[in-house]
Length: 310
Image (cartoon, rainbow, N blue to C red):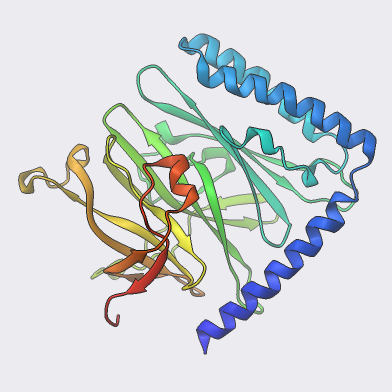
């Protein structure tokens, strides 16, 4: 019964999204569309240079130019409806299915293997004016990765998938799947939760069920050997987030994340309101996820089949 409800909800959301996209494109005048395309070319050049240069000082300079140009472009009336497709390799524009906002994120790599993340949330406005919630990556000052944060002390990441969690009469929240990098030894991925309190962005929410533990977590962070790849994706067919189970490749390396790799088994979180239910031993089949190609070595894995009952 619950599965049928979510399937119907997904179909309705998809229909509205397609209708909304065609309607939204009509809001951009020819002049504004032309202006945004010119800006997109400049942004693409700045973004590519930011990644290509080897010197950190140059990289920061190009990124500063990118930020200024992006804000200028977003001031174009109804820019919310322009996709900036040519930036997809380096910058992610993720739009909520209800067309209420989009979150823009990217990373700045440094020579020592570390990263700084940049981002903003652009809110949809009726008159096409610009309304942003800038995100300040404060990872270096966050001592507890389970802390609930805001746009001012964001646990930075480059998000590549957004999953709305809704229920009639309740405020929605959004699950974000993201890549966080880390250093020259380990990489991190994150399952984040975004919600809003008026014009404030709230990151983290006590929704993640943890096996054999009484308290839910606010955020899930996975850390593993940098040379390892990790699947973290969402399967719409079964309404579940699925991810590699990580384990040390030597038993005496427990809790040393530099030695954690995928152990060929998979776990998941079943999407349900108000919390996400943990599932062990889910099996992946069929095609590789295109999202995994961007952030890890692709693995032939998309469709889920649960092993046993949980």
